[in-house]
Each structure stands twice: as C-alpha cells, then as structure tokens.
Image (cartoon, rainbow, N blue to C red):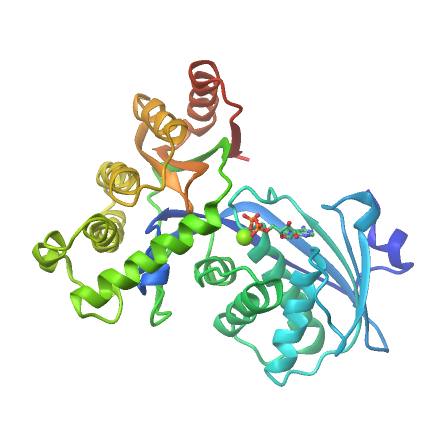
Amino acid sequence: MQTFADLFGTAPALAAEAPGRVNLIGEHTDYNGGFVLPTVIPQRTRVELVPRPDANVRVWSANVDEAHRMEQFLLGREAVTHTWLDYVQGVTVALRQRGLHLRGVDMRIESTVPIGSGLSSSAALEVSVARALRAAFDLRLDDVELAMAGKWAENEFVGAPTGIMDQMVVSLGAAGAALFLDTRSLHFDRVPLPPTVELVVIDSGIRHRLVTGEYATRRSQCEEASRRLRVHELRDVPVANLPQVEALDEPFRRRARHVVTEDDRVLQAVAALRANDPAQVGELFYASHASMRDDYEVSVPQVDALVEIASSEHDVYGARLTGGGFGGSIVVLAKRGSGRAVADRVAERYRTECGETPTVLLPA
Ligand code: ADP
Ligand code: MG
C-alpha cells in the first residue's frame, strides 16, 4: 500500500483518527427527539496530512477502487460529484460556513472500518478529516461543533438524511464506555461498560432495497402519531402515558409504542450499566429486538434467526438488531473473553441453518 511519502513526496505533518460505532440500544428514536446509546469500536479511520501553500486539496483513500483513489478539488469551488469525495468536500464547506479559515492540504486516508456495513465509516471519515483540519489550522471548533459539521456534510452535501448520533459518538465517544445521548438537547454522558462484558457484531448479509422508502414511511407515521397525541415529538410521550398510545389506530399505535418504550429502554439500560447488571442490559436488548420486529416492523426473518441463535449461547446476555433494519447486523452482549468463540459459533450456525453469508464485524 502506498505511503504518504510515495503519494506526495514528503512525510505527513500530522495525523488524526476517528473510530467506527455500533448502537447498543435506542433505535429509530433519534428522529423522534429521543435517546440513543451507541459506543465506539476499535476499527478506525486515519488521516495523514500536509498543509499546502495554495487552496488545492489533494486527497487519496486506500479504501476505494484503484481508479478513484486520488481526487482533488479547490477550496471554495467544492461541487457535488456523487463519489466518496463529497464526504471530504462536505466537511471543508461546513467548516468554512462556520467562518473558519482553511488552506489547501494533501491528505492520505486509510480505514479499518468496514464500508457500508452499518458501523458508520461515513462519520469516521467526516470526523477524522475534520480533526485533521482542526489540528492543521488551529481551528476553534469543539467536539460537538465538529460533530455538527460532519452531520452537515452528510445531510446537505452528500444528501443522506441521517441523524446526529453517528457523528456525536464518533467525535465524543471513548473506548470502554457508551455515549448516552439526548438527540434533542445534545446533552450527553459517558457510561462505562462493565468490565465483565464484550460486544459481538455480526452482519446478516441481508440488505433490502426500498429501505429509504420504508424509513420515510416510518418517519411520517411517527409524525402523524405525534399530531394525534398532541405532542411536538414522540419523545414528549412519557412511558406512563402508554394508555394514550394504546388508544391510537394502527399502525400508529404500534409505531408509537416502539418509540416510547424504546426511549424508556435506553434509560433503563443506562441505569443497568451503572448498576453493573449485564443480565438486565441483555434483557433490554431482547425486548428492543422484539419491539423492532413486532411493533416497528423493521426486522427480517434472517435477522430474527440470528438473534435467536445468539440467545441460545451460554455466554450471551442479550442480542438485537442494530441500525435501521431491513437486514443489517445484530449486536450481542457477551461475557468478556467469550466474544470470539460466540461470534464464530453463531455465524456458523446461521450459515448452515439459514443458508446466508454472515460476516463477523466484532471482535475485529
Ligand atoms: P456506513 O457509514 O454504514 O459505512 P455509508 O453508506 O453511510 O455506510 O457510508 C459509506 C460511504 O462513505 C462510502 O461509500 C464512501 O463514499 C464513504 N467512505 C467511508 N469511508 C471511506 C474511506 N475510508 N475512504 C473513502 N470513502 C469512504
Ligand atoms: Mg454512514
């Protein structure tokens, strides 16, 4: 693989990194103003950089097709290309819009975060690039503002309508802790993970088309449920008001019930982590999965089977679909030290019983 010196003829002046992430619990709550509980993973994106005297940005990535590894653009002349470069251009536009002064750079990017597997390689890219630019030009930008700049790049420049969870945990998360985030106020707290647990993430190999349409439908159903419940967002319905939710017509009843109970499960999971009670966190994982499957209807039979197989493991506290759904990955809370063996056994059973091709994403 080409080094920075191979590419640009000099050693890098500095390097910055950002990790991928997995959401532990709190799914489809972010666009309802609610709570999420993601954590960072060991896989990371690394950016090496040298400032340039002009306004050119040359950027190379090890993680794309050979033909598209080296790209360039001019600061102030960023234009949408519908390629990976848009994530980088989006960040430079977002920073300049905040009145921050950039100059040109040469950058080399290399990542161990699997791309497009739901571990947020996109936020890892945005945040690592923003961190590298912040360090190079002494930008006055705190970690929350940096996350907001990454979100702006992804929403407004790339055009992907995502919430703030990914960039916040990638920017503010720390190894060994989950980030308890209120997506409305952006208030956050780091909650240590008990030393007795380990996370396993297995990709089901299933990816459904039409996901964007299904998301849009869920979103508008949540908005309609809020109108009927006379609240601003479903976040504003405390779990004590579930009887009002139960009185709604379908599908609003089940959609709102998922969101309201899921917000409550995040709060319960935070309490259980603080009480060092992994068994309770595991029960909440199973309850969250059932709610996504039955009430929110975003799971698929193969992912349900994967959760079921994981649940039969002795060293597993809990398992659930993580991410938006319609395929994707499960996250498993396992006993520390058992992660590798659990991952291999569950993946193998899933492969033989379901005939699908799983990928173990964690342990890396
Ligand atoms: P996820 O964030 O779940 O991995 P996304 O579809 O949100 O998936 O983002 C993946 C896209 O982000 C890639 O298609 C690519 O355009 C860009 N990307 C992420 N990491 C890199 C990287 N290391 N180098 C170049 N592009 C990257
Ligand atoms: Mg992403």
